[in-house]
Every structure is written in structure tokens, then in C-alpha cells.
Length: 180
Image 1 (cartoon, rainbow, N blue to C red):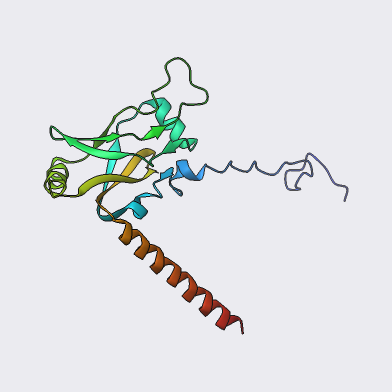
Image 2 (tube, rainbow, N blue to C red):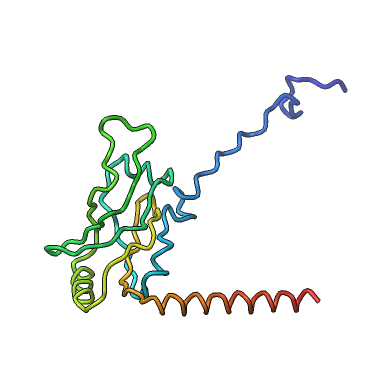
């Protein structure tokens, strides 16, 4: 029987496969952190952690999606029953115009009143401060993980480094033993 193009039961050879959906950016999808403060765990003992929202402008959100956020020198401040994020650098949006945001502006952190009251009580203790650990997306909104931190002395930092090196050597020894 000759093949007919008008017969719907016979598949056509000219049909295109369905278009593959474009993969979403892992930062925007919430699979990877938008910004991470690597020096926080080196300079501070991190204890209690709080998830808080950040009051941002539109170009700031777009810049965070592009990966232009830096939390290295940032810290949290409690004032008049509100929490603020200071010195967090969010670079200008690449396609922004004259209405682009300031890079180092003070941003408000969104927390419940009971969380703010708890943080006020904890930060009154000598040596404690609030340090942002990471920025990430959750359900399309930017969240900041804020940690209660106590500063390390130089000898604490050396001890941490010694422990890290000992763990690294132990893992290497186990891996060598398993290869044999």
C-alpha cells in the first residue's frame, strides 16, 4: 500500500520534535545561593540563625539574580524595633538606567516582632553581633540568613584551621586505604 501524507494514522516524517523547555537559572530557582559570606565562619562563631526577607528595589533583585551581590563586610543592625542590613554590596543592574539603585544602601530586613525582640536580647550580650551568612531565593523572593555571631580571637582561628587540616588528612588517609 503506498504511503499517503493525508492519512492521519500514518505519522508524518516532517513533524518536529517538541521544543525543549529552557532550563531555569539555578540561583533564580532556589537551587543555589545567590551570595554566600565565606569569611563569616572564619572570623566569627555562628550560633542562632534566622531567615528574614529583604526590602529591595526591582533592579536590586535583578542584580542578585545575575550574581552581583557581596556580603563580605555586611552586618545587621537593630534600631527602634526594626532590623537593617548595612554594607551589603549589590552591584548595579547591567541593563539599568538612571534609576538604578545605590550599591551600598541600607536595606530593611523583614522579621517578626518576637524575632526582633529575641535578637535584641541576644545582641545586648557583650561581643555578639548580627552577620548575614547568605542570600538566596525562596518562592521567587530574596531571603537573607542572619546569624548571631561572636568574634573569634586569633588563637581560635588557628585552632579552627588545625582541626580542618587534621580532618582533611584523615579523609585522605581513608581514601588511600580504600584504594589499596
